[in-house]
Image (cartoon, rainbow over all chains, first blue to last red; front, side):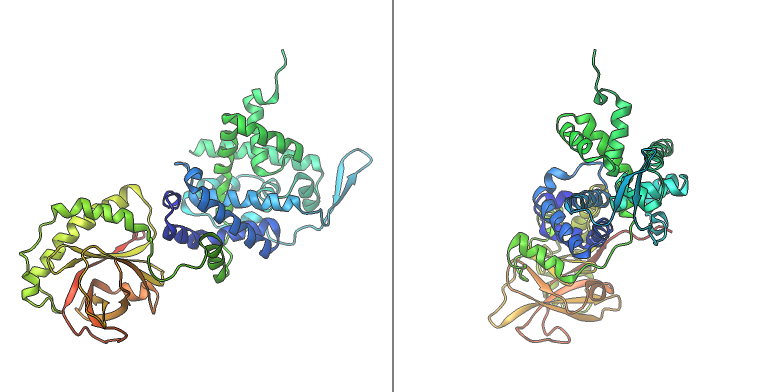
Length: 180
Length: 270
């Protein structure tokens, strides 16, 4: 379908919009925590896609996941252009960075996801991570949180958060490679 | 000899992972972005991480989309929202090539065979055979092409024959769409004050009205109900000539196009 959009097929473009806009809106809204800003991001993504689809598609790309990544990155760009809002961070006596922020009341990100058949491998590998490191990785990716913001949200030292994300990513890579 | 981090594949991969995750600090992020434009391996490493993680984003429950959002996007990109004519449906250029390729192999029935029997609403064996041959030659390559190379949106498609048994009209609608797209391959003459009218024929041979077809070789018409409701019971599609502006419950004249109604989507695996 992306290839047909690249050829200027408006009907394919509309069909792609109908199939993906809801998930892309969820992706952007999760990062920005602002529906109107998220709608703007989704519009930008589709406008860019219409003009650049012929350059964007790669044979291995899974269209929805790829569009989600594009949307998420654009939303993160928007987020980081905003002035900082609530986090207050500084350094403790031992040099450890500390952050005061509200912990999330929401259930874990992992529990809210609904994986399709072709994403079972990812689901299984994420399921093998310990809950807190997994939550750190997912919050970073799905909500665009930085290490410092993760430390505040999860009420853990910054060094712990960095170690969690680094080890979790490498564990994911190993797991997904071994199941490939 | 000085070595840099980007000369170590393990470090490249670790930083690519952090870049994709979004946890690199701003200066490091900018350095990665600069290097990605120069170093294909670094760009590929980041791409691989997005490919690994992208499924997480796609697994999020969708949010309801404001129905006006599409129209705003359409206006932004194309000016005014598209009118119900001059469509450029996905199948048009592609299917016309299929039809052109398939048409020479069509075994047409004797000229006028259907016309001599009025080509009316009853099932006519010769007509059915001709439609079958036509559909076999046209939809066969279509199905093959769909199965092997594409993932087209779920749609209803009919390639209707004219009274001479030749490809006459292509009808298509997205499965959950609210419009039907039509392309005349062999135009018929429509008298002043008359219009072409699309019908469905169900398995019991009952005829149901769908919509008046605007004039033109390549048009789109609004449906009064979702395509799924209009076309799901249909075994065949047919077109007659009716008085413009009328909403006849049944065709008042013979069909000028008729053909099978195809459902282009995979059945769920058992």
